[in-house]
Length: 305
Image (tube, rainbow, N blue to C red):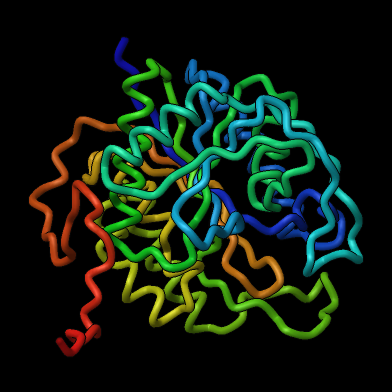
C-alpha cells in the first residue's frame, strides 16, 4: 500500500472571504476562485486533504488533529464584528496517528489531540469551508510550531510524506498561510482594503511569478529573504512544509488562481500539480535535513565545571 501526494495548494488563512464576501470585491473574488480549486480537487481522486496551518500555533513540538468529527463555534479574534463560524469537520484519525509516529521517527516531538471543544484554528476552518464544504474528503491538519526553523519544518514535511505513503492515501497537501502578513492595525472601510505597502505587493508578485511557473523549491529557498522584505507569514513555514511534503523540486505546473488584499495581507490561492518537465538544476543555498536532532544552541556557553 503506497500512497502519494498528488498535488498541492496554498490557501489564505483570513476568514473574510467566508464571513463577508459581499463587503469587498477582492474577498468575493477569493470565494469564487475557491470554487475552481474545489472542482479541481474533486476531479483529482484525492482521498485526503493534508493541511499545515500557520494559525494553529503550538509551542512544544507539533500536534496532529485526531478527532474524527471536531465540532464547535469560533469567533475570529481580529474580526469578531463579522460574526461567528460554526464548524463540523471530517478528519482522518488514522493518518493523524501515523503522522505522529513518522514525525517521532524523524526525531520530532509530536502528539495527537482529540477532545470535544478543541479550538480549531480559523485558517483550517476557513480553508475547509471554501474547498470542502460538504466534508466529502476527510482532512488532517498539523500545527505550526512557533519556534521551529527551516530544518525542523522540512523534517515535519518529510514526515507528512512518510505518513501518506504508509497509509496509502492519495493526498492533496495544503499550506494555509498569507504571503506578506502586515495587517492594518486600525479599522478600515472594507471596500478600501489594499496590500499594506507597495513593497509588500511587489514581493508578493515576485513570489507568485515563480509559483505560477511551478518553481516551488526555488520559492522555498527564497523564503527567508521574502520574510525579511515583506514580513512573510510565520517566516513562510507553510512554504517550507509544502515543498518538503511534495518532494523538494520544481517539477510542477503552477496556477495562480487569485491574489487579493485581505486587511492588508497578501492573500493568494495557488495550485501545484506534478509535471514531468525538466526544471533544470537547482541551487540549494539553504541547508537540508532528514532528521531533527534538536536545537543547535549556537549561543549556549559551556557550564563551568
